[in-house]
Image 1: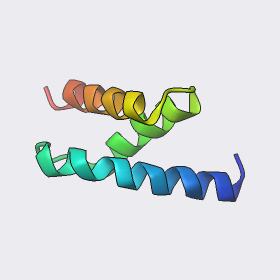
Image 2: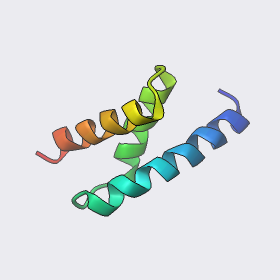
Image 3: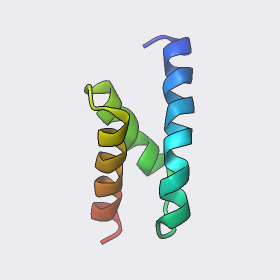
Length: 62
């Protein structure tokens, strides 16, 4: 991945994290970001990646 592609993905990730952050328990943003970015890199849609990241966070916060 080149710098421009990574910057684009980070920007998208930050926008998608906003709605999760406002309704989620206290968490480390980087855990959600990592799960979202891996899902996107694996071909998941933004909605699917958001759901995957939320599920990942649920498993961490149990």
